[in-house]
Image 1: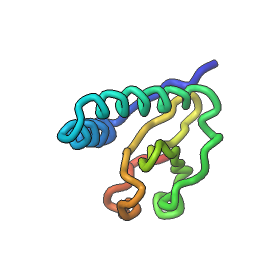
Image 2: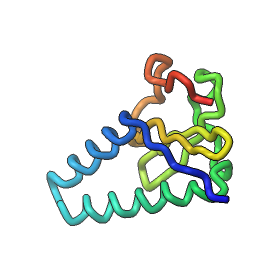
Image 3: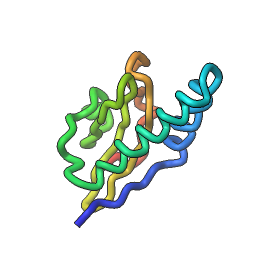
Image 4: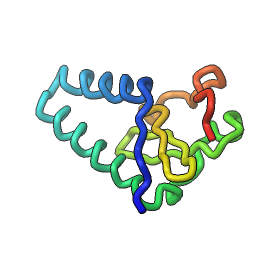
Amino acid sequence: MPHKIHITPEAADDLRAIGDYIAQNSPETAHRFMTSIERQIATLQKFPARHGRAPEAALAGADLRQMMHGLYRVLYTLDNDIVTIHAIRHGARRPLRSNELPERAT
C-alpha cells in the first residue's frame, strides 16, 4: 500500500521560493525543476525509508531523513503510512537549527 505524502506549509513555502528564485532567470527551467522535484517527492510513496538520515536527525530526536534532488535536500519523516515533508533546502545551506526543526518530527 502506498504511503500518503503530506507537505507542511513551511515546506510548500520553501518549494515556492525555490521555484520563484529559479524563474527570475528562466521560467522554463523553473517549471522543469518544479515538475522534477514534485515527481521525486511522489516516489516517497513507495519505500520512503530508502533514504538516509539527515544530519539534524540526532538534534531533532527523530528519524528525520533526507532525499537529495540535485543540490536540494528534501527533509522528511515517516510515521506509519504518512510521509511528512518538513523542509526543502539548498544543500549548501547550514543544517537546520533546533528552533527550525519540526515540532513533532517522528
